[in-house]
Image 1 (cartoon, rainbow, N blue to C red):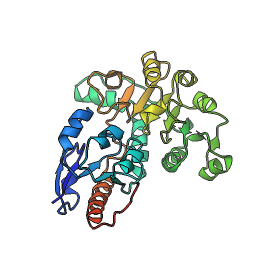
Image 2 (image 1 turned 90 degrees about the horizontal axis):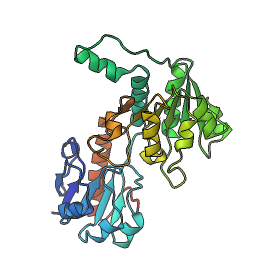
Image 3 (image 1 turned 120 degrees about the horizontal axis):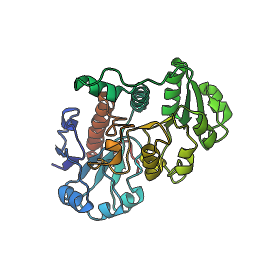
Length: 314
């Protein structure tokens, strides 16, 4: 029976959410940092299931896994998989379906948590600490700037409008017609959006064009009482520049669900800065998404074994 391993199954739920009887399946709950350790751990597995970009698969990994025949990623896009290398080594890569609503919902959890200082106020309650030490930021009448107005950004915009917020959006290819369709204003530039927004939320795909899009100069354009929220990809924002802006209080705070290196190491600034509300890449982690990921991954395994692979990426 073919051997199948599921990586980064932090919550140890993958094997309970799908039928894996077509293979000898196991899951690994701990993240494996180094390529050497990864190759050692999965060298005998013919099928590997990965979760988004938790574990990258560059060319070196494919070259060192001669038994690998099938790689399955959650979602239909994974920038950390070298598809050309997979093709060159005869490895089929398949994806799964995915819902865009969970990251939109988490975006609002972060915005609301920042606006009303929920974490420090809740922590004070639990610790029998001082009663009511912060003053919240109103959403009604405030401006939300969306960097990106795709599937997720559009959903975030609808909720903002329900709160009575003024919504402005920008991306390199965003047209006025698309902005009008979503009922939002089109910012003339990224700098203009940053300078007028009380909250800025990022909803772009990471690419060479968007990597480092928001740097020190852009963060300096934000208001000192504004918040930055990123549930997309960390590399869209210059991370050292963001840390400096937070430490110097050049911006009021940040809500972050994505990081350059995950898991984030102990003592990292984003773990300890008091004006950061950080979550461990929860954007897509909901029961509906997990059921879809793992059930379709198991379907992909069975279809591949029958010679009719599904949802093929390469």
